[in-house]
Image 1 (tube, rainbow, N blue to C red):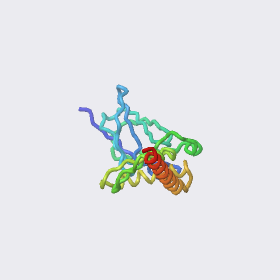
Image 2: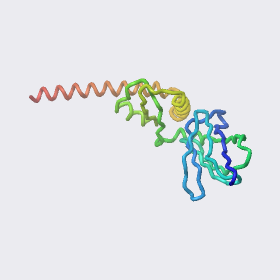
Image 3: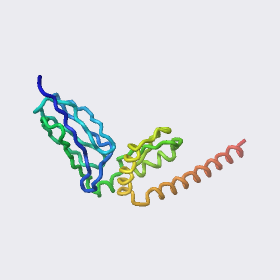
Length: 187
């Protein structure tokens, strides 16, 4: 029987010396199909076991990180951890992007209403809510996204965002009062 070997590694954003959370890792098998491989909050991953000497292609993806494809050969030394150095895309590309929506994970709150979610798209963010199921993985993911959002929207983006939400709420209340006034006046 052929000896089976597993490759392990971790991803790091080299220029920032940090681990990007939830990087999407795909192993491309011999048929060309891809299988998603999970990473933990520190960027560690383990590829499925394969025959010793077998080659595999691995793709790494995440918004604002340059996609990277790496070829691995499974060898007998499974204790070796491969470091995959990833890079952010050009900072100007992050600043000028108006289409990528990053997902932040929140817990312990009621979900944000449509006004907040819709306004968040202007800044490139949306929120998923998980009730009371918070964990360190969400925090790590959110910290990374918040760093990207500061590059994209400026250091004070959160203050501007919430101020604009307050103004939108006031405007909605005014409109509702005017509609109510019109409807009672027409009766």
